Length: 172
Image 1 (cartoon, one colour):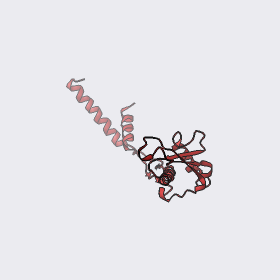
Image 2: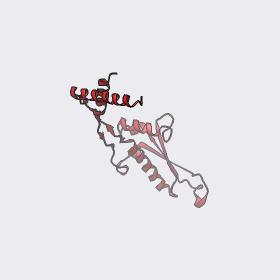
Image 3: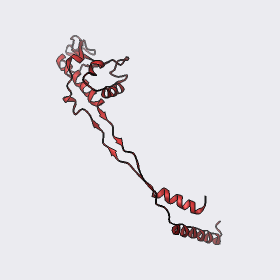
Image 4: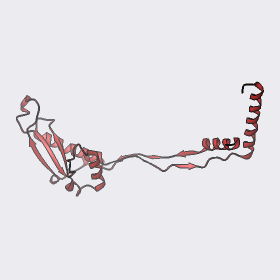
């Protein structure tokens, strides 16, 4: 590569600007509390909880399991949201065939509080699935400034004189 070409290449690399703007991510559904889920979409099952028997927790049926059918949810939510829900919950709350979401709650001694906890967890899963990630705009490339012929000659002359000076000192 000639000295002039190297100077032009260096200048072009330094002068080009690539800028992009990032749009913020957002939730399509406002708040988990505002998501209303029709009770016909899910089934509630109560069962005996596990763990130590303090205050009768393993002798009463206060553990609640909520099973929501994805087919029924598709009547109330769009396919994009449900596809995101399937991706997020694959291997976790989603059954292996992908048709049912299973959420359980055993945090309280009361079965009614655990039922409300299951519904709240389902609302939170739907809210989390409604997240739209930030989108980067296409980069805007500004053309590199072209090196004028005068600057290229000056650089070439300067580099040549620098080489001459270094040759005189014998450091080559």
